[in-house]
Every structure is written in structure tokens, then in C-alpha cells.
Length: 449
Ligand code: S3P
Image 1 (spheres, rainbow, N blue to C red):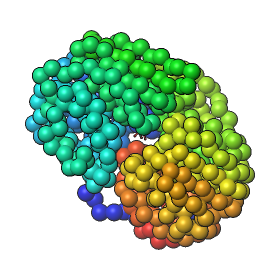
Image 2: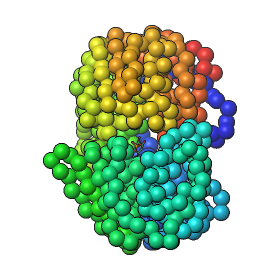
Image 3: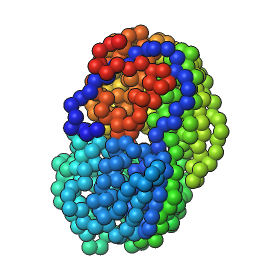
Image 4: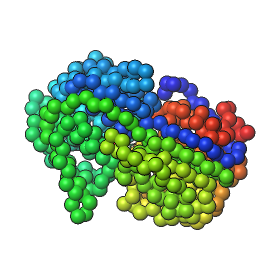
């Protein structure tokens, strides 16, 4: 599926209980990193359970353009990497499509190399702020030879002598933290990154697994200091990618809001930096049992059994935002079906995701008869225990807006239409098929069923 395709509207409608078992695709954050770290390590990395979504495939193509071999053999992805410092000058711009994680991490990965790399993306990605990664890269000595007001297209040229930096990440962003750590790998000496609040730690954990020397200290206020030693010998690994907790959010909320539902979601990543949505849904009264807890490849996994529940509005602590930052759109859907007010403060970062998610969610709720209040950095949803539906939602090329409102339509009085479902392929290509198997109702033409 190409981003140049014309928009493909779709509607969802209430058809009855959702039942059965679903395995969500591999975690997007880990899948991007598996491609990049495999390409950077010496020797072969094999990956099972990789998310084969558009975003990750774009990262894979970028790694090929930098000289790594990336191919699928049977069920396994095989990446033959080049060793730290081994990337080759790409002959064409690296096109990251819709993928913020892909492009921001890759700017750190290759931006320090002493050749020009050009980064491009789709209309959504080209609107997103890149100063947050360009600023620390400039401090390393990287020259930004082209940019469009700190947005894509961007071209970078690394310096003859890159410098190790000491960088405090000014916002809660795992992408910025990761970009600086990756740049630090090709710089002699120690690069130090401070994050005021802990964000997803996949870069730190996975780099250590590939053989990097990483020291982490957390102070009493929760501020984390991460030190990476430059020029490590990274060696290919065997990786298993667990199910994406962000994707699991859709069947979780769908089963909670559709009467009679009972759904099991298998093999979901339970890394504590990613489980804020589950915590919040349980506080709202969601019947979610965490079963078969286990550890695989250094990450906690579990199966989640979720049953339809009467939900109550809650106030979500702002400090929880980093552990559920991509899940607010689908939480807003759960909040609309809850009784009472749900307050979501401290979510200004939602404005710079694949779309301005705060605005996109608020408009989508309003279009379907849900009362909400949108502030600069907060959203309040007034739940009435049900949703009228009947509205048309603008997705702004954002996969999570598309899936959230399709989920909302599964329990609404009238069908809900989204203007385009093609972007769903960026993170959850099997979404429509998987949900149809659970009993969800969708119609193609975008007309109410
Ligand atoms: C990601 C970090 C988050 C998240 C994104 C994936 C990552 O972005 O929204 O979907 O894999 O590092 P920010 O770093 O912008 O918060």
C-alpha cells in the first residue's frame, strides 16, 4: 500500500460482542531499533515477530541504502550489518514515509558520518518539528546543509571530528534521547544524556544487548542520566519482537466498550515504560486480567484477557503521560463510553505526533456527539456511558486517529466513518481482518451500514 494512494474511507458499526483471541503485530519501537541496530552491528541479526508495517519497512529500506543487507527468509528477518562506523554514503534520499521514529533515530545513527545524507518523508512527517534532534546534532558538530524551517527535507553532513556531548533532553521524548545516544556511538569518548522523566527505554536495553557500554543512574526525582561509550564493538543478535502495547490498546478498549465482549490479546510487551493505558483502564473499572506473565529476551510479556465493563471517568496523572503517550486517542474513546469526566493533563506532546492529536481527537469526539474540552496541553472528556456516532472523522494521515475512531464506532448508536484508512498500514496492517475475526462490523464505502 502506498502513501500516494487516494484516500480510502471506511465505516465501523455495532454488530455484537467481540470474542476470541488476537495477537497484535510486533512492537513498532523495538522493530525500528531491530532494523537499525542490526544494520549497525557486525555480523548477522535475526528478528522474529518484526512489525511488517510501512514505517518499519521504510527504516529497513534506509538501512539497505546505507549498505546493510536486509531480507526475509521464511518467518525470520535477517540483517547483515556493517559494524559501527561502517555505513556507506547513500545514493538517494532516505524516504521515511510517515515514520517519526525512523527518521529521528536515523538522523542520530548516520548524521555524524562525514558524507551528506538527505532525509525525506510524507506530508504528515514533513510538518513535524525536527529542531529537537537538529539542536543536539549541531552540538556534536553535524552540519545541517538543508532544512525547511527545521522540518524535512533535511540534509546532514557529519564533521571530521565529532564531539561527545552532554545533553539534557528538554521534553519527554524517547526519540530525542535515542537520537543523541546513537550519535554518541560513532563519537570517541562518552556521550551523556539526561532525561527529566523516564521515557521508553528500548534504545538503552537493546544497545546493551548488542554489546554497547551503557551506564544509567536515576536520582531521587526520577531524572535519568545515561552515559554511552563511543566506538563500541556491536555484534549481531537474535531478537524476538513482542506484541505492541500501543496496538493492543485498540482491542483492549474495543472489548471494554462493546457489550458482551471477552477477548484475549496474546504476547503483549509489559515494559513498565509502556503500560500506562492498562493502568488507567483498570482504574476506570476495566476488567483486564494479566495472565501468563513471562520474560523473553529481557522484556516482560503477558496475555491480556479483557471483558466488557462499565467504566467510570478518572483523572490521569500528568506524570503517566510518557508511558502511554500514543494511547491517548484510544483512551479518549474509552472515556466517551465511561460515566463521568475523564481529565488528561500534561499532553502537549500530542500536538506534534503524526497529526495534532489533541485537536484531531477533540474534533472527532465532537463530530460524534461527545462533549469535550480541548486546552493547549489537556483534554477533558465528558462521558455519558454511550456515544451517538453518525459522524465523519478526519484522520489527518494519522493511523492512531483512524483506528481509535473505528473502535469508537463498534459500540456507537450509529456508524462512524473515517475519511481514510490507508495509514493504518503504518503500524497495524492486519487491523481490519483481525477485528473482523473478533466480530467487528466494518463497511468499505464509508457509508453507514
Ligand atoms: C517512540 C517515541 C515516542 C512515541 C513514538 C515512538 C520511540 O515519540 O510517540 O510513537 O520509538 O522512541 P516521542 O519521542 O516523540 O515522544
